[in-house]
Image (cartoon, rainbow, N blue to C red; front, side):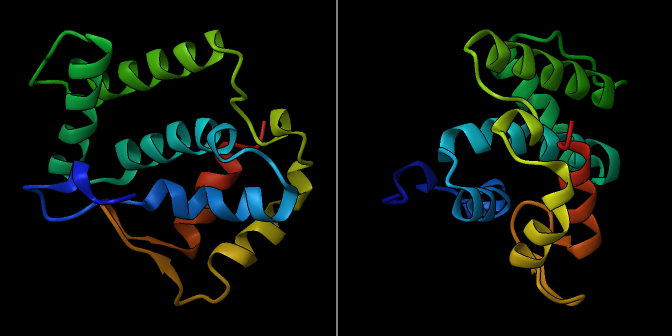
Length: 144
């Protein structure tokens, strides 16, 4: 957390950490385990709701890290395949992929949501601004 990886960039994006810290804070789960649940869910949200440039960055992650063949005509497809491979890799390490696999009852999502974005005008800022509705969708997609 010394910003070394942000050198030459506009800054770090801690969105995924913002989604996860309330999970580990409320339920005493390991931060890395929570990130293995939240990052794919957040990436899928970006693919679904992001603008062209945001989806292209997820597609770049897919090609650069998980060797998905680049297809500029289908950035969403490339990005989705990257997330699929990312989740498969996390699963191969034995990491949890859902909130339920973290040992948390999905019925707790409203409590996690309230801790993360307590009001309607709350948001997590970063690569993509995520308001309360966005955060709720991400948590629910990671439930089971």
